[in-house]
Image 1: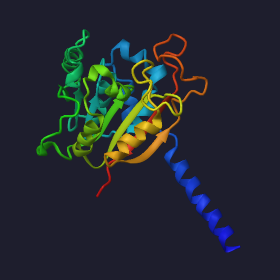
Image 2 (image 1 turned 90 degrees about the vertical axis):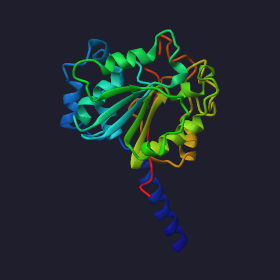
Image 3 (image 1 turned 135 degrees about the horizontal axis):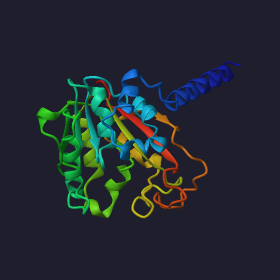
Image 4 (image 1 turned 180 degrees about the vertical axis):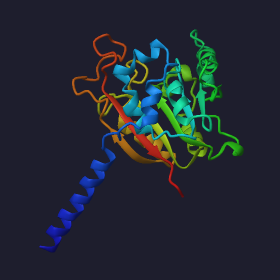
Length: 259
């Protein structure tokens, strides 16, 4: 009888823990709502809101007033523009472009610099270093949130010239304050595919991301199925018109232990 009771109790704890990790994002704060409604946002950003769910994802990130945030691989600046009014005048947003991609024809560093120079985003700064470059000691424990959206899989691709993803995750760990958050949103690959589809389909298996990030010392704080799509069979490139904007995506928030 005692063993049965113990087994039930253990099962309840495990289920409770799993439910906590998979809990939905918290409701958006007034500051987040204001950021999404900010008149400085260009139409090319707001047109993506329907598929990016910015209010829910910003709440999931736990970004708040006064924070120092890094937007890794900022693309056109969509998330940097949203982080900016939330962190406010006492906060800072670094739009980080890996040096390995600065030679792309699209010139992503120039795009990041132009975005940071737009009216209303004085607290945004474009920066660029090699992906796995380790930060100097004066940058340790500086950031509250480090974020990357739909680009983590790219770190493994050939155009990154062999940059160490483990090295990048180690650098992120050093940069974050104790208790800080590392948030990764990306396109899911089929179970068991690991890194096999990062370059051809632009997908990565969530379990692989978890293993890589936890290897650097992080703990999984929460995951969300908000962007999940069971109808996506994971066999198509994410740019295929039949799945573009509707891929099965995962949301993972890792935390640097407080001690």
